[in-house]
Length: 277
Ligand code: DGL
Image (cartoon, helix red, strand yellow):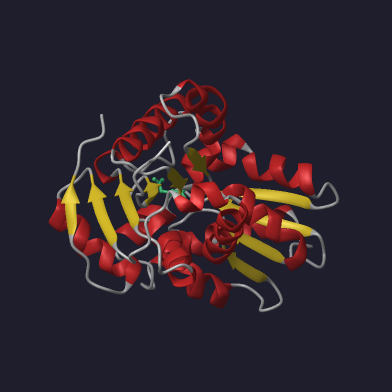
């Protein structure tokens, strides 16, 4: 089959996936990327399984329609609540079952064992990711000796989205959830920021905890796992266009997206509005 080559699709509920995209582009600038943020319907973090699954499937279908043979769910909540069903149930029934959808939980989990010395790990994430226990289950599968504690931080996404990440006012909510997590297990030496917005709070988090605790942002692990995947999956790699371009689509107003996206990317971007449902 002689297919057209096309960009890698990167999907997030909104802006958070930009922290993943940034690391992927740093490592693999040669590829073309099509970023889709479902800003009009975000946040996903407090939504039910059914809704997150439905919205995520719609976004994946849209990116497939636009030609992307590979879609990364650059959102923990979508990875936790929709990835498995899309991979196992939906993808095999689609017109081209050779297309692929990958998440960001597995590559993050794979890195955890090399980082923790105490083998006690804390997960900070949205309510949806925590209630799915996806991190706990993935870690138990790969590294059953690791003790996992989880804490949902429902206020953190709005703080980041409203430009309050560095404000003194954010300290209260950041400290609240850090304390709650560290109370669950005093031996935690590694905290995983398992929500794509949280890297913007990393400096504040580090200031509020002891320096002996490692704070892990997942972007670089996702990027190196993708590089490794494409190195092995040469047929998929051949289907990906490589002219170093990036296009941003949002279900919200394009100029609104462009303005906020620059906070996550530290560069100015242009965006286009898209519908996905
Ligand atoms: N990007 C989502 C995640 O990583 C969080 C944002 C949201 O709640 O929509 O879990």
